[in-house]
Image 1 (cartoon, rainbow, N blue to C red):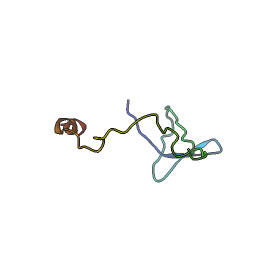
Image 2 (image 1 turned 90 degrees about the vertical axis):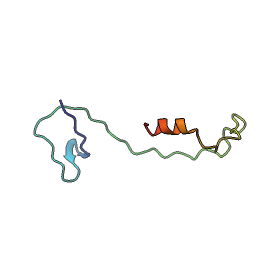
Image 3 (image 1 turned 120 degrees about the horizontal axis):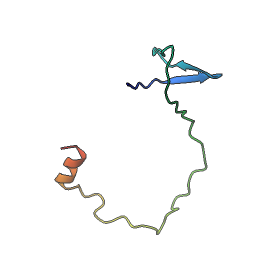
Length: 73
């Protein structure tokens, strides 16, 4: 079994490929619908004031072994 991601638009219940991609005549799969982000009121500044403290060494570079772990080495 193979998987392929195709960007599509849905127009009146019809799935249409976006761009030059073609869809197969028949297929089964999963459909995830990405809804536009909801707009909400901005959160007030200082909402979590006093709930945590940023440590003094927050901006200190990480040790080399940890950096290599992030880089997959």
